[in-house]
Image (cartoon, rainbow, N blue to C red):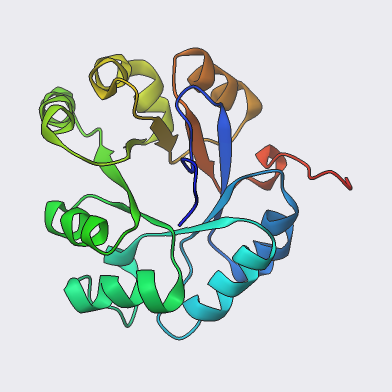
Amino acid sequence: MPDKPIVPTGSATVIPSVHRLAALDRALEADAPAVLLTDAHIGNVHALADRCHEAGKAILVRPDLMEGLRADKLGLTILAKDIGVDGIFTGSAATARLAQQAGMSVYWRFFLLDSRALETAVVQAAHSLCDGFELVPGPAALAQGAPLIDEAGDRPVIAGGFVNSREVASSLFAAGFSGVTTSEQSLWPPGPAA
C-alpha cells in the first residue's frame, strides 16, 4: 500500500481509467500516481497489478464489477495481500468495510441520480471511515458536489464519469474536487519523457 494518500486532498489529480487494456501502456506513461483498472478480471489482475507497480503506480479497481471475483472477505484479502491492489472504488458498505480490513484504500462511489441521492451521500460521508469519495457522473458532480466536498473535510472527493474535456476537469478542480477519473486519454498528464 502506498505510504502517502493515493489522491491527496486539493491535489488536482487525474487518474487514468483503463477500460480497454490497449490503453494501459499510455496510462503507465502518464504523470499520475495511480491507474484505475476497470477492465480487470481475476485472470489478468495480478499481471496488471505487477505492471502498474513496476511503473510506480498504485492500482485501483472496482471489485464489485470484477469478473471472477466475489467481493467478500476472501476475495478482497486476495486482492490486497496476494495481488497487491492498493485501493478500490465501491458503492457497497460491506465491500468498503472488508477492503479496509484487508488494508486497501477505499473510495466510496456515490451516484448523483437526484437530490435525495446527494443528501444520502452527505449523511453517509459524515459517518464513513473511507479514505475518500467519488461522485459520478462528473457534470452532475460539478453542479451539485459542494455539500459532499464540505462534509468530506480533509478526505479527497473525486469526480468520475463523463469527464471528457479539459474544461470539465478544470472546472471540477476549481470547484474543490481533488481528483478526476477519466478514460479520456487526452486528459492524462504526459509523463516526463513526453
